[in-house]
Length: 338
Image (cartoon, rainbow, N blue to C red; front, side):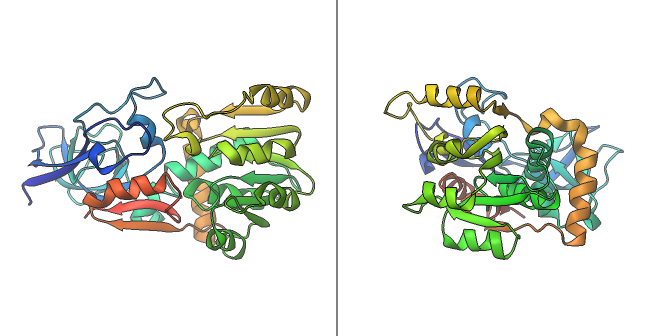
């Protein structure tokens, strides 16, 4: 067994975009499990936008990563040594081992994975946290009805792509917003979205209006910024807006210049009787069994599809993460560690 554990720690807090100097690759001795513990080897590491918030010391729903600590992240890991009777060597588990090759766990929070349910990396995407985010946010807050129009931002990503596919399964019309012609074509030609709009196009607001001739009943928010500015005038009375992410603002170090737009938003909320609700996926932890049953069944039946963007090597995680925040990935971003 290797005795060296490579890990990536937070070296400094970024103000703006994360850069290489904000991370540090360290090498240390592989920890040994004590009674009741297991030694995990990371096979797959998930990279997700929420991690940018953990790099900041600002108050949030979860504590930040401290300087010198391993970057947080969910992993698919293999048990390579066990002193815990609940786990055997060779078990595959879903863990929160972070950006490192090896980690020790007392077993709490680990979930044993059945490889027959899906490819291991899919438990970090469509069968994992992003998939459950799409499923719970859309169905519990968005509540799409047949023939309604559901619009989702970052639609080619792991959350947005499933939101649109579930909307279609529920009988609604799905419109995706993505960056670039290739991603838009993927949404309509591969995933079955009814329409896709390129947010990089010069006429984006007008193109979105043309794609939503009957307005928008559900808007699944992943981005914020200029995308939301284009969506807001199109929201119908009683529209529902699950607010999952605001990636357009994650790298901002100060508020954008310009007039205060909050009166426009608040007037729309009042006059259109809108529902805007932020959520964190584990608000709906009780729905996990329903999620695995439904999405797992749809995946096996071919009713939903998922795309992955695979990066090889732990050392390449920082650059891949920074690119993801600018929309460089195409599908669920995962790092193949081992």
